[in-house]
Length: 365
Ligand code: GLY
Ligand code: MN
Ligand code: MN
Image (cartoon, rainbow, N blue to C red):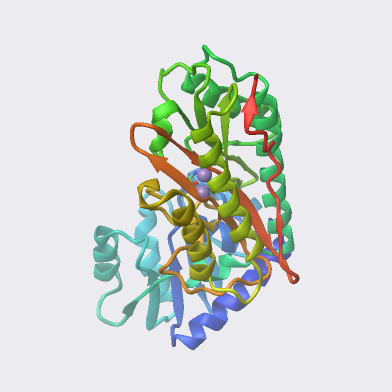
């Protein structure tokens, strides 16, 4: 992340602190720490006030923090000071009285320790989604990074698609994809690759197994690379051979549901409305037995699953800069399933699909 970007991200955070009457916030969720500061390591805390921005780290990360988070003052936990004990120490030193913490990320044990450490003079207040809301709209730099992750993932899939044939196991396909991500410059997979063949495709989050792919199998492949911290999340479903009438119908149902709902993704439309369009389309064509129970999609960025969610319970209104997956599915126990997933950038005019992996539905026939 460019240093200017980090400084830029402090402004809306400070505005939110002011609106909530908070003197400071303790940021502990790694993705939020990275988003705000640029620091990409596994452990570090931010303490941000109206006038200061500090990053607290132990010796494993001092050099990295200084390099990656130049907009923050580095506070070092020495050998005699445990890292987390620095948090109440700094809050007291900064004179903070009302302090926000990330209720969705701090464990109860950590909260108890913080509470004990700050004593009675500091009022700890839970916050929820404060930074996650800032992360919903991606900056132009972030959009570029998401495009790069989507591009690596799409190219990897196109390569591996040529190798899929009867005799390969689900886990072989997953391995080939993850290897290719790295060959193309990714840090690795953004999540455990899903490869589910035949009847196993009815499990939306199947783990690849030793099951061998046979002629006529429909295979759901859900994959995404992580590159420069940003995640891709794409799904394709292919038939090895020629699709049967049932397979063709299921593929067509999901394709139509995705097409209709992607078309509706534009600024001003609520997430719940997009979800409804796809769900109605699946239910009308495939009935309730299709078991499309998961949400239609989710924001994607530094984490695979971010806000907002394309679901009945999320009324967030789409805005330019959001990058959201669209992933309807049909799952029938004992038979199999279909899912198609693309990454959609909301633009001022409408949207742009940024995942370009091959949409070929039948291979090797
Ligand atoms: N790959 C997980 C998901 O699609 O949400
Ligand atoms: Mn996925
Ligand atoms: Mn997804």
